[in-house]
Image (tube, rainbow, N blue to C red; front, side, top):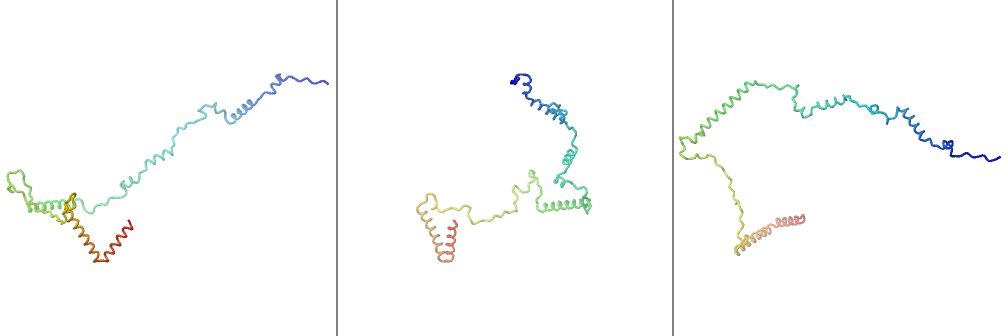
Length: 208
């Protein structure tokens, strides 16, 4: 037997056998899914995809109105309670008013009599009648001031000046030495006080 002749691969039959059909299969698969889900969303109009809700939200609106109508605690305290009745006064108003007017009249009469007795009567300063004969009335009130033995300004000795004389400087030094010697004699005469003073000084140095 002779060898079988081979067919050419450049023909139409070979081309159809080697062609790829993946894109066609993907298209059909996608179209099937879109048909099952309700259609292609990219091709659908916006009116079919979205819905504008123009109805009012009644619960939220009522909640906002209730919050606005709510009165604060400070305002509720300041408000007058309509259920609490005002306490009526035990005395009639007419009697109280009459009593007050009588008290005021009696006070004014007493004050007027007191002014007449004291001589403090209103006079005309620019009038022709002058009962004082050009002299001012003496003020009966006296201002008492407490006198103090301490001078207002303490003046240092002359030896403490900026440029003192030799005598005044020596006098100042002698006075200072005498004061210090008096302190020493006083401490020597009271040994207990002197010991306490030394203890205080030592304690102060240790603290510092």
